[in-house]
Image (cartoon, rainbow, N blue to C red; front, side, top):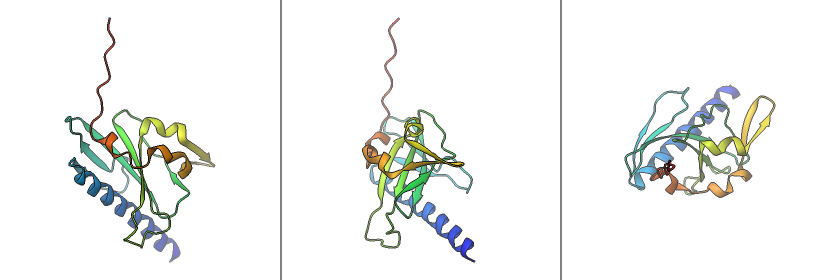
Length: 145
């Protein structure tokens, strides 16, 4: 019975985090779409202000120490949004901490524990509330020949 309760708890945390992020994106005026299914690497598709599509992978935890990143895809147009509830998931008056990380940065902040890849909360500080990086990706300058 404990495993079923724990699985439901993890599922609820993930779903709540995805809808929280979706809500924030709409508040920023971005066009966003939630992906469906339980074995996905893309949770939300976003159309940036400049019309470019990007994808988000939402990782959430009720506690505060680390988040599993075993299935993160590293691509220029993909971001990982870490939602940390700091043991206050049930307290709806307390907002979670949110960290928006370009997926290309994830390997450099990842730690390995046995078979798992994890990102520790302490490695995320510079990414806290970086919602603006989702608004419009700058086009790289082309090299002159």
